[in-house]
Length: 253
Image (cartoon, rainbow, N blue to C red; front, side, top):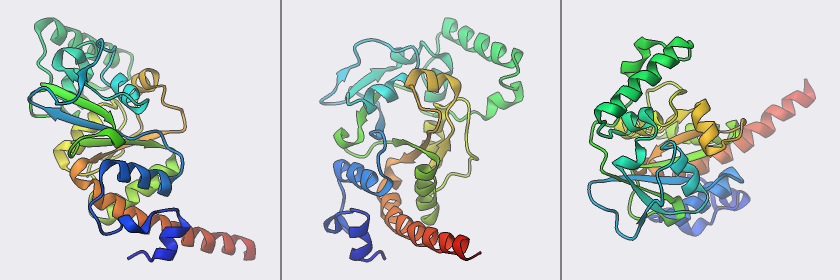
């Protein structure tokens, strides 16, 4: 258990320890423990129209574009049709693909294989939601309602390292290796396994979300969020202590 003095050192309000945290408190704890990060994004798949949200104004060129929109402060929902501009993203999210979109998906895969970006044998292993996509609610974590399916946290390698260590401390780390293309598949991986999954992103995601070169993602299932945050308090304190230890060895070496 982390003592109050260490929590105070890292700016974490000790009054929230041991209590059920709401999404605003979880966002604040992440900011306090990790330092400056972009607003985490809550993603929730639903079978009915999400209450209290308006449909996105227009379909984006890719589903991951909605990550940036939510990180910038918007709360909204999308339908399956709003994901069809990116056949690969639509596939990983479980959208029903028309014959035309399915043809676009095959064409995109063939192009990726042709330019040696992807191997055909990799395609069957790309994570995909096994439930049909109806509606998806996106929101900044602080504005999320209920328990999200997934919370997308982006940060630099040190920040993501801490989150992954925290998830691992509670046996909440996915068995997937660090993922790359396509970035959107990290959502399906986290949902399917119920554990945190890490993605380096992909070039499309970095274009559509304007993800900085020095950042990548960890997707945390909503059901694992509080346990991960609780462990993160200990992990941040432990890393601080170990950093001092290792630095002292460098001085004396």
